[in-house]
Image 1: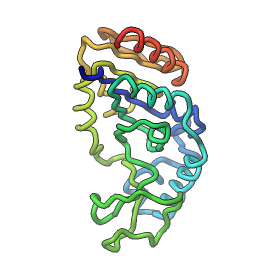
Image 2: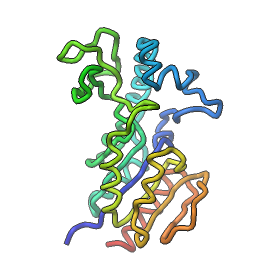
Image 3: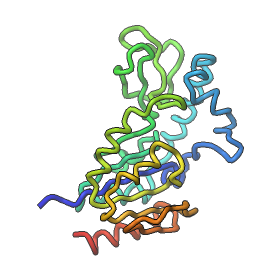
Length: 232
């Protein structure tokens, strides 16, 4: 008998518990930088050195933090369930906690890719990517990140995963960043949906929706207990 399938949509909140700064402050700045300067194709064109340095600092920070209990619980669920994680996060904390099926919607911080041929993607060693670092075709490497204004190439695969869920969990995201926030609309009405967030998002009336007003690690501990009790 196949294991029940959990699909998880995770966002910045789960990584924030590990010390990864959330995407941007209320003033719209990201670590003191205008988003347009460091997270758009136009910003890259105008000042690639600034963009590379910005992501080097994000990478350096992310390499110094460790997965928290929320990440670990999701990895542990693989013992009893099939688990697919669709994450808006670009860090590798889910993988480092032991999760084996992680789909990164917004790219991966510890990978670089060619500016000439986007199919050339490389796993980085260390945290620095500099001007002059080139792909095998001689073109400058850029962060393997989906910037504002760019297509989200993994979105279709995320929709396919979501439609096959027996259980759907949302953790660490307020369901306002599209297109990822729309994934909940692809979940079958008759399956349980757990939404974990300390600031509960406005949710339309949905069948089988369970709202848990907690930080990710505490909420996931509650959900794990419920799943092991009710769905095995």
